[in-house]
Amino acid sequence: MASATGSLRPHLVVFEDHSWRGLRPLAASVPVFELRCGLFSTRERLELLGARGSLRCRPGLAGLLPAASWPVADEPVADRTEFWLAGRLAPDLALVQALLALGAQGTPFTLHDAEGLVAGLFPPPAAAAVVAAWRAWARGTTARFTVPGGAVVTPVQALPGWRLELTGDGDGGRSPALLAALEAACAGTRGSLTRSWDVVPATAAAIAGDLAGGLAAGGWERRPFGLFAEDPGAAPWTGRSLPRRCSGPDLPAGIWLQGDDLWCADGVTLAPGAVLDTRRGAVVIDRGCDIASHSLLEGPLYLGPGCRVKAGARLYGESSFGIGNRLAGEIGESTFGDFTNKQHEGFIGHAVLGSWVNLGALTTCSDLKNNYGTVKVDLGDGQEATGQRFVGLLAGDHVKTAIGTLFNTGTCVGFASNIFGQGMPPKHVPAYSWGGREGDPVYGLEAAVATARVVVGRRGCRFLPAHAELFDILSRA
Image (cartoon, rainbow, N blue to C red):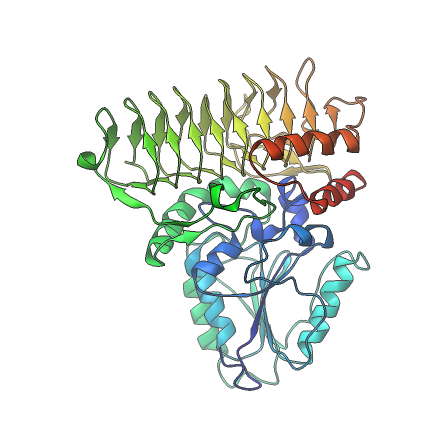
């Protein structure tokens, strides 16, 4: 990447900002650039494209980032041109690649959506000023992270509400070329994910694009946020994944395959009687997954390393599951984090669940109102119109539910809540709720941490002091 101020490559900075609040409850405990949609997170897509740099996230999350190749940025570096890229980018490899190319062309610019900065190339001393503005937000001095605008402002027609701003002393006539490249990259994409309910509608295209990009890159490796194995060699995410297309002759006897878009990585076990339907999209089964008899897997679908699909499970398309999930019952159009359990009957649809969630038997959520109207969701700041007809459960990390729990359409459950008792909980359940109903007590920090230590340890992972620190921070939020 040649910069406008010299031959040095701009330093890539992947950041989150005030917009994380729209991606609650998951983003309360996970940096925005680590949230998965499709197969990968924003950081993982950048890795797939060969990009490396540094990360800027809220202080309480930095200690749980994967260390390899991505240091946590702190102090500004003098005389360094920086290319800043928002973690909330839509899950689109072509868009990410186009923005990287935009950062390499050398003309200082900023690109904004309705939330703020999406991308920007900042030569010194502008880079130092941007770092100072971001740090002021991260420390709570300012409510929003904002950067100075440019003199030449051009709307991006492909993405309403987006604008490209040239920030240097003239653009040398390059503005039309920059805008044309950006318009081409943005055509057909969502641009950015700014709300939790944006994840499910973006999943089908993300699975297709991520699979193609992952295969073109010769496979991928996982370095998941917040997971630290007791024995790294035995961790389900350790090693390189390169799924292969499987056809009828490649499969064990008794497997029913519809379509020709099944992809299996090493160590996948398919039991007789499993039905794999790829007519609407790819079914991608990552390393070490175990698919039991009489289960239905419908694409587009991604199963992360070490997932176990129990007998009789029905997993419908536009779904993505993280590392080590245990899955049963009926699940459709949903995204789960890592080591989340839904081991029994019950329906979960159009849901976005974090990691270390455990759903008791027969836990069920509504994803459609009786009057077929659009859904409103309360992420913690009052009800907000989603504009969508289908929105299910939104649950943060370490949420637990009792047997028979029922959730209303578009319910949001905060970090480490424990849901039990009669009747439906309200549509917004704060973090650390014990029971989940109005007037119920708060789940004690020490008890929540003690449970998490047991849960994490059972899956061969370490619970670090940084985890305990995050629990403490969120208990006081």
